[in-house]
View 1 (tube, rainbow, N blue to C red):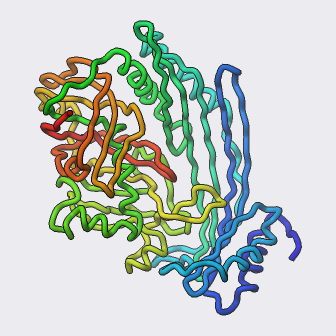
View 2 (view 1 turned 135 degrees about the vertical axis):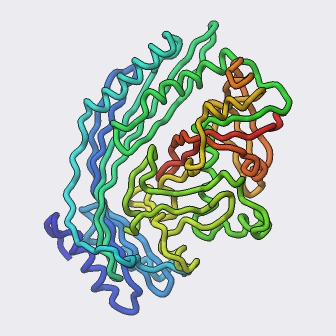
View 3 (view 1 turned 120 degrees about the horizontal axis):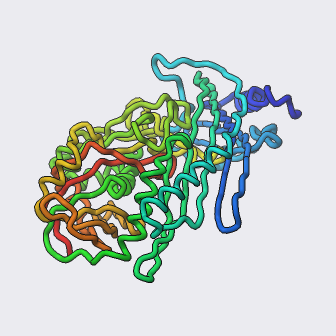
Length: 450
């Protein structure tokens, strides 16, 4: 096989793989991604801009439950079929693995891809400048920006299989990462913040600035949370990290036994009746916006917990085959050269039964508001334990009455989830691998603080 013109390379790789694996092949899947990424960094050394373009191919061959995977750039794509075929005899059998097929009513279109154009670096620079201005103004100079990076990219993807799927789609993503320093009473505290959105224009710059201010000033100016029982109000950006750590429990059928143990074979709820957990490709405020997953399956809204009760799972093609259900469109590729795996798009608490956070606070006579994470949450679903270190405010008669430099939330995870009495209507999202996780404000009465 010889190197062919760029526009026909996908067809040539697919044809070579199909011809070399005619029998007893179960099938094949060929994936292509083209992307353009702009990166703007501002730090002590000044402003730096980089534009990166990528193109890659990934091939999976299926035979009698065995799956072989390999990936290559354009210059090596001509050898992809041979490389993947050589891996197939050593691949271990995996139940349910098969080439993705079209879903009922799904259109199949073979669409050549064009490489996307990178966004303007000036837009990314403006995002950093706006963050700097809001930090200085809102903190009255107590918080400064020491470094920031904006990444924004678009990718165009397509997939074709011998079982009839042919699809192409576009996705985009943008992130803002910043390091900030706060000063109070001669002390300094630094922190890193991260925000993500489908486009640069949707990055919540103002919200991230106020989050950064709280994160670096509260540990310097507050007092530790006293022991006792208080009503607990958890900010959406703290709760979002908790919800994100729950998402893998619903990835296919891998944690079914653990979920059975948690719920005593369905005799107990997973969470309180105000909690429904959903994954969606187009959740308002979500960090990603997707119409198809990494296997080309149309993305749909999937409910895994309905009013506290377990009702479903997030699946790719293989997991759906094992569970004998339609795939939910939850296959992801963390990079174009990585094998597909199950992941979430925008995994979140459904806010539809929520009330205003102001109304939640009005009902708190003596409580604690967990506003900002101080470190990565320690959450162990297998042991049914969690520990979250954060800072925030004490609440008296519905109003903030003092700053708290350290709030430790710890205990049994099942008890926490089943104790949630009310939720807000204010969902916000945080980043998780491959997507985002979100939650509104959570209210738990009489939580014990040690």
